[in-house]
Picture 1 (cartoon, rainbow, N blue to C red):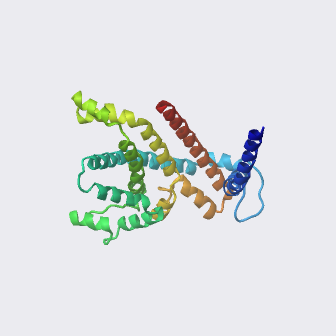
Picture 2: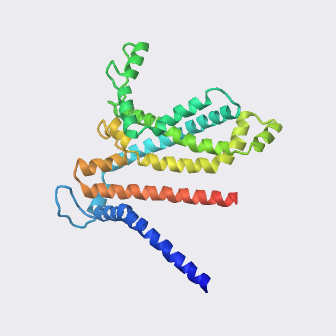
Picture 3: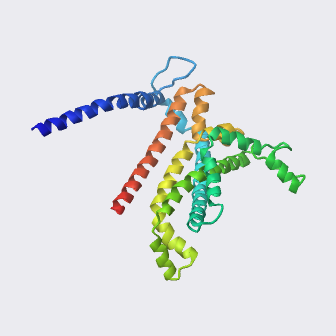
Length: 301
């Protein structure tokens, strides 16, 4: 009896200790989330305190050609970034892991250089690459191009297609380090006896890669892909500093469109509606991550 009373008292004290945390989470996360969802069903504007509840915002949003274009730009930006971040991240992680296991010189330097891009804030990355992409003669890349071909020039940020490619390249450079960290951790725990068995079977490098390494790492690669996709869908700071969404809306990804809708067009309802769309996308990808990681945990057990 005394044991049961002590357990109940312990449960009550635990709940009391967690109440401040619940209050903070409610004030910081749940209430703003509720406000965004509520405002998305209105015609609210920053220019007026009056609004009414309506579904017109969502109807206008999904029938808007500009929103469909923004979603297409975001999709191209995300898919291209994720594919190349995974490929380059795996290549860097593989060679860093190989260099470390074989005590090759320069391994620590390569790992440090790659991690720098992950540690630098997105705004700083955008500003640095904007200077690199500068199309005047003193721009770094333009200067190098003119050394090779004096009459040559590339409209890095002034052409719609070139600007989207340029922004994607910057995001790939930025996100490769994150993929490399996760995949490098997987390679560090890779069972060496599988590689040794494949070598005994006279399997070449590519056969070992496709038939041994990638299948074993496939759950981690899939989880990394989901995490990188979530991050890329929510990219705002780097694109804002690099192109501001321009020229026109060529690089206006969905997160940047939310900012412009609220603070440039003062359309609070549209910004909230697009935020809900982005929220649904993030929830879907998060659920996918939880399902995949849960299955991976069950398989390990």
